Image (cartoon, rainbow, N blue to C red; front, top):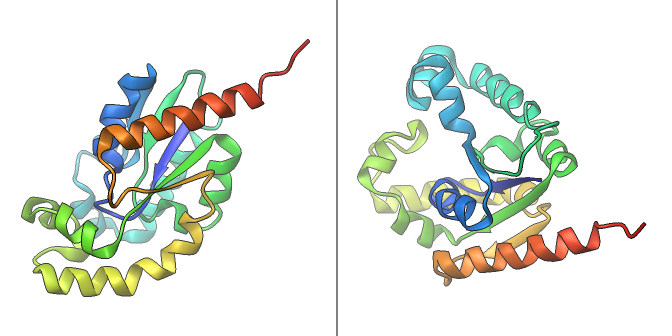
Length: 181
């Protein structure tokens, strides 16, 4: 089974993926890291040197690589991946999508200075600028994110609670998709 963690930057996809994978006994992949390792550059450098369109094409290729993945895996996606083309539809065909939903204020509190530096769109922003950016940008992404198989409002939840919620959902999903011969 492939489980895609989706949501806005800073919502905890990568961090939660690192905790969720061992809790479920799954492998772990991070789409941004796969692209960075393949190119030998950071996402910020890729955007600067090759542009967003090139990066999005690489994202799509990575997404398609999970179509027949033979093992259970948690995939932490880039925040924009579900919002491009038919990526969200493809993710839903391949596996389960989990939207880690947070408020703009909560996202701002989670993104450190280092986290801002490595993200080209928000590099150098202070808290007020970042909040305004997220409040302007998130509503356009919400219609894509909200199509997820599971939407979790993570704002007031700790990582362990989120993991337990996902584990329960996966168990229910597996039971409902097990045919009796």
